[in-house]
Length: 106
Image 1: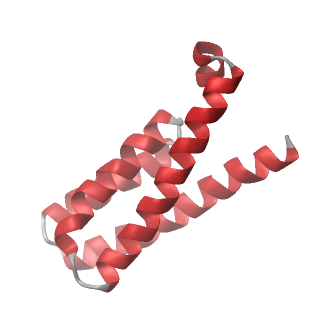
Image 2 (image 1 turned 135 degrees about the vertical axis):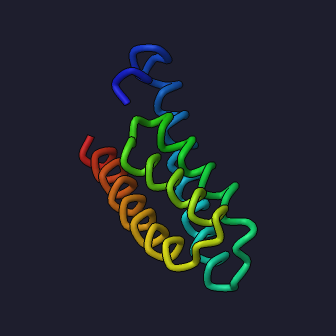
């Protein structure tokens, strides 16, 4: 995230981070709802969206989990999809908590 501040400046970096955090949070909710309702077709684009936003913030573990989730869902491996979804949600919640916690301390 330091690179964002260097490239974009403080105000624009804060806007970008806030927008990405919101997108990630919404996508994680969407993923949970898609799986709970059995609508697995929508998992791939949601997971890739999480991966893209996470990568943009330098959250490499979350980005990797999002990509892995998309691969599992595309391969129609329900056991792996559920396991990787749990990991993605855990990493996402941790990353968002770290970002938001840091912002409130900031």
